[in-house]
Length: 312
Length: 234
Image 1 (cartoon, chains in turn brown, red):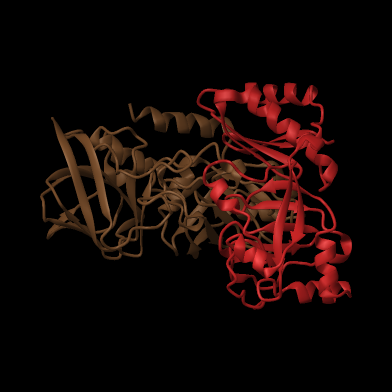
Image 2 (cartoon, rainbow over the protein chains, first blue to last red):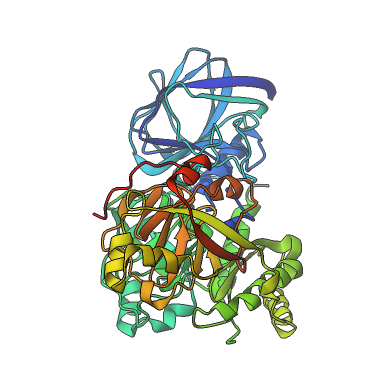
C-alpha cells in the first residue's frame, strides 16, 4: 500500500539532543569538514527502508530521548528504528523496528533508553532541509546542515516537514530485538600501521580484556576505560583520521573516533573499527562493557557487503 | 621521500611521503593530491592531505583493495613535485592587540622581545599552508621563526573567537569559527575563512602562502571585525 503523504511534526519539547541526519558529508574532508551523519548508519538505513525511502533520506537521530516531544500536524505514516527509547504515541508504547500511523494532534514522546542510545525516526520521502556541502546532516560544532542549514540541533517550535510517499506493511527481514547495531559486545577492529609500535603486553591486554564505555562520549568520539596501553610513539605529525579510528593518547586510554571527529589528528592508533562496529559503539551507553577483536580487512569487507546486501 | 602505503581502515589507505614537517614537502603533497584525485576519479570518497601524508578513503564496494594500491603506486612512480610558486599568495590583515590577542605578552616574554617586535616578526615572513583540519577552513601554517615558537596553553580556552590568529610551537593558524582552543592568540582578522569553507571554496589551500599584515583597530572594524575582548588564558 502506498499513500501520498505531506506532513509535519512540531517540536513541543526539544530533549537533550535530537538532530537531522543523513548518510553524512563526503568529498569535503580536505576542507576540514567532518563526516557527520547517522552515527548508527545501519539502523538509520533500516528506518528509511521500512518506508520505502531512499536509504539515505534525511531522518531524525534522537539521542537518549530525555523528553523529546513532537506533535503531528497531519495524519501520516512514520518509521522508528534503532534504540528503544521508551517511545510513546500518546499513551501507546512504540517499539522500534516498524512503521506506525500518527494522527493530527497526536504526540510522540521519547523518554529514556531501554536498549541502545540512538533512535531513528524516518518520514515519507525524508525530512526537508537545505543541502549544505552535499548533505543535510547537522554538525553543531561546525554550524553546518540540519533543519536551518546552520548545524543547530532541534529546538522548540521547529517544524519537521516532508512531502513523500510511504510504503507500508514492509516487515523487517530480521527481529528488531537482534538488530546487529544493538546486540553483542564485540567490536571488530582492522589493525592499522602503528599497531607494531604498541608493546606486546599492551596488545595482549587490548584484545583480551574488557573495556568500559566512558561517560565522555559523544558524536565526536567515545573514550574506553580499561588497562593502560603503552605505545612507543608519543605523538605524531597530524594525519587524516578515518571513521572508527582507535587512537591512544599518552594516558593510555583509547578514544574511538566517530562521525563528528576532527579530520586530522596526531595520536597513534591501534587501527579502526569496521563501519558496523562503529555503529554498534554509537549505540552503547556509558558503563557498558565492550571487547575489541582484531579482524582482517578482507573479512571486514565481506561482512560489510553482506550487511548491505540485506537492504535489497 | 619515504613513500609508504599503509592500511588505515577497512576502506582507507594512508599514503606516507615524509617523516618530518618541512616547507619543501608541500610541492610533493600538492602534486600527489592532484594525481591521486585524477587516478581514483569516481571511486574516491575522500582524500585528506596533511603535512607528510595523504589519507585516501576509496569506495571499497566498487574498487578492489589491490587495485587501489596499484593506482597509488603508479601515481607515486611518476610523481614530480608541483611548483609551489603557483600556489596563491594571500595577504591576511590582522588587528594585533592585547584585547583580542592576550597571549602576545606570553609569546613576547618567552622570546625576550617587545610585543611590537612579536607582531613585526609574525608579519615578517610568508607561511605555507600545510593542511586544513580541526574545523571547516582551519588552516595549519608555518613555519613561524624559532624565537616566536610557543607551546600550546596548558589549559585550552573554552571559547576562542572566530578570526583569532594564533601560534602553537612553530605553526600559526586562524580560527574560522568560535571554538575551544589551546593556541596562543595574538590578534584577530575579519578574513572570511568560514563563509568560503561552507561553500566548499576554501580561501586557503595546502601549498598556498600567507603573509599577515598588521592593521589598526579602525581598519579592522571597517572590514567588519568583531572587537569583543578575548579572555586571558585560563
